[in-house]
Amino acid sequence: MTTVTSDFVIDVTDQTFAAEVLERSKTTPVIVDFWAEWCGPCRMLGPVLEKLAAEYQGGFILAKLDVDSNPAAARQFQVQGIPAVKAFKDGRLVSEFTGAQPEPQVRKFIEALVPSEADLLAKQAFEWEANDQPAMAETNYRAALEKKPDHYPAKVGLGRVLLNQGKFDEGIALLQSIPAGVPERAPADALLAAAEFRRHAAGHTEAELQAKIEANPGDVAARYALACLYAGQQKFARALDEFLEVVRRDRSYNDDGARKAMLAIFTILGEGDLVRNYRQKLANTLF
Image (cartoon, rainbow, N blue to C red; front, side, top):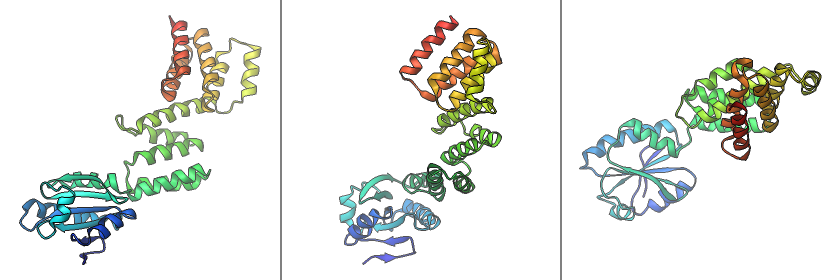
């Protein structure tokens, strides 16, 4: 028989393990705390796990198993020492640790297993964004950041939505706040570069800029704006052609802006044939 100690904490036995842990984990992650009465570290870790189970409000189930009374499950899952914490999802063991850990480490362990409320809000926001509902996407991204101010995927998403709505100042400030060293820094940099392109091209049309260049091929301001327009539309080959021509005609224009813009596009695109080709063209032009 399974003993329910709270809404989100249960006691399990060898007999109930399959149903209450393996089967249940197919719908809700289950974290098993293998413990014993005589184990001092178990008494330190147990309250931390129970606190987090209550905090997550059903995001996972904490199943407590006394290894002295239930040795079969401990043997089956190769418990070598206690406390041993093992996480189950979709009917299988997915992660584990042994020994009493401080709360921040336990929290990280759980965060990797269970989507937080901020994660769920950010996911909903992305779905709204993909369905061309920017207002709803913005609302959900902001809600995610209220729950977790350093939720970097939500910051990237909100920054992208703001830039797409022309809210450049707020979007740029938000993206610039993402620290170096986190995975979201790369997409943030790509969005920042695209924002600068779009801001510089604002108010111009392709036809207008092409007409200016046809009338005066040396009009580097028009050519630079056209390159920015193309880059903002992700027409990167055309953008690189125009930026390269600006470098050839007047490298100093906009504080060496055309060369810097090409480097920014290289960063956005990553390594590939297009980037290698234009790196070589840029090098030939400069040297």
